[in-house]
Length: 482
Image (cartoon, rainbow, N blue to C red; front, side, top):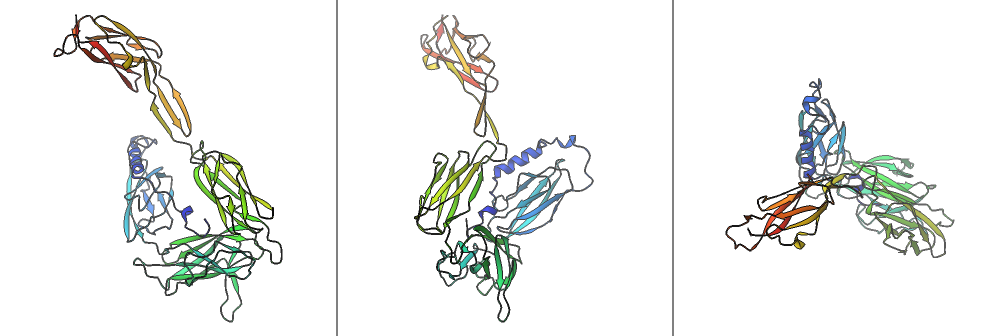
């Protein structure tokens, strides 16, 4: 969200189980043929560039695999510090996790022929320890902002927006591993997106505007530059990046420009005006994913209306102040578009749109056996005396395949039968179609358990199988016949 952490640039950590899956897949050829079926050894040796990289916590780095035979399986010796994708056809991006000391992680690449290469990756603590802070100048009382004056230029109580034409500062802080500020480090600020300008106005010199500027950190580790939202900027999101030139570690700040026309009417506006969220796969839309919108201008307070309660949860229906926001959470129901209405105290309205779409990744499939059900159940079967018979009927069986939010049932075509005591209980037929009866007969001779009384009730096991699973039915019989 505006002015806060860079979660949009971090990637979820893969689990160790996933690593094991990669190795297992690779060992079996991974669906790309066993090593013996692929051909001769490649003329170019397997390599990774850079061969021994040094990376920093939170800073994405691209590694490139060359030589060998693709595709390539990947794994990391410590996924919590350095997660890698399952596989790649060439280049892949790694984003190191947080470490307090220098940590070496081994990254192994295996090509389709079985060749292995392991490289050391040195992960160093990140130097930029806090998110970027925006401090807007209070140049126009009619321009709303949520800034809080403080003595530090880089604390976390800055603004989340700035008005068109307004000036202010953005800053970051550098810290060493023991918590002290890093002084004299060059920090490069870049406007990545939006109608922002970085400017300088050194004594006796005219103002200079640009999209990039490098400044040294001060004695406290703070690096700060002056910024201005372009006077004719419309409402939009702005992204500013600060990079520690020495290490390559960077952070980004996301801010909002509020369109303000001096002397004119402050139009009711909301930002962003549209948010699109995609689900985890091509059959499923997102659930429990939040999107925040911010309201500017008009006459507060504002009322927000959600016409799609079955698809979205609106966490705030009343926003008290200009610049305040509300959050919408998805419920797993696809909706495109969902238009939410914002009304101010004077009756003016504007809208924002949220699209909850299916994803682009095919869903995983999971196949499990479907239960075999026997009627009547074992509890309702009679005790079979000498020469007595009864019938049971098996149904069900087969498999149930779940793909995304869809299920497909493949029924069993036949069952095979048997028993652990064929000298006591006969089962006919030995192969039967689902829904057809099976006859159980207590033979007229034989003893189940010689140590028990003649007329005691015993149990023998009946087995019904559909090749994927076996249902065991306990059948009650008289112990001794005749």
